[in-house]
Length: 456
Image (cartoon, rainbow, N blue to C red; front, side):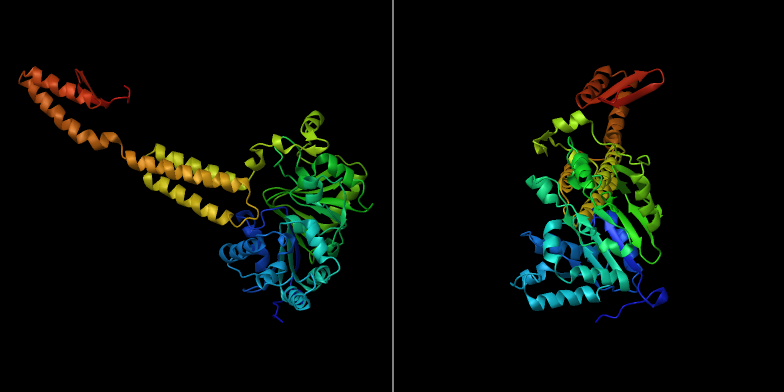
């Protein structure tokens, strides 16, 4: 068994981190790193539970992307445990009957100080984890010391109830809850965790609350146990819960929301909140406290127009699906830097902007799934390279600097011709300059020249 570093009191800190999305994006690097640093000197024993996406044909590729993300962005190793290793070995998944694989899975989770899981299907993950030792191992980690970091689909399984996103949003099932793993119960909080809380991929229809929208969430909220509330975490946002301190910290780009009885209270990035405050907020909301949620639902008529037979009409969705992506904020900043560099004829600056954007895309390529935003970013990078090529072909130096010495030499010949009253030769020099795009202007103060199109 791997030896484990101890903190105050002789054990590791106990940390449950819930990420709304972006678990392998640059936005969550700092969160991962800070938690890892609290778990003792490197290398910290870390394990990826790949089960949520284990049903996908590209599961091995997705697992490798996580491994690369940890190695390149966090400088930390992570082992893969779950479906992928068995698939690589040509066997069945470890939770599907392979006793030895199951034992290896138990060993990896038991010995890990950092347990991580992310995107995929929450209902698939529940089917594979329910009835196994995985939920109890996760609770043991939080009881005896260590960190559990779950994002996206995996985060959905943490509470007393789980939203079956694929079945409701993609297949069209009436909204219903699945029984969750209730790993969050280790904190004493009774909640249903909903990541992707501020999702805007629908564009013209409401896909907040992990693609449920207001109507479906309202229906589901009525079916929660009386003491339970909704714990929402925005995309590219994390709620880091310290079980020893009994307090949480919000990090990333968005908000954390407690919702009960259709009312909400939020905490922004950088804010801290105690477990008791989260629970008491839910109680206050049930008693009728005013909602503090900043993003109102769409107008009722818009919601009706944007749904067909109660389901979102995907044909109405536009570019808004990725407009709020943090990656696109990075892209636009680099595009602005590039445009400024071209305008000021700063070739090194333009090249630097392109190289920085390429580096950003490499960092973001680990995100699962990257989605349309990454495609848009790659298109931007290609367009900047094209613009850089055109600039190289045309030259980035001021044309006046390039042709100036030649123009001045011809104007000197013209001045001498005029001084010698050889006006035909002087006019010929002037006419030739005009043909070459150089306008000559004579005045009592002397002669000046402009390239055609420069203006006065």
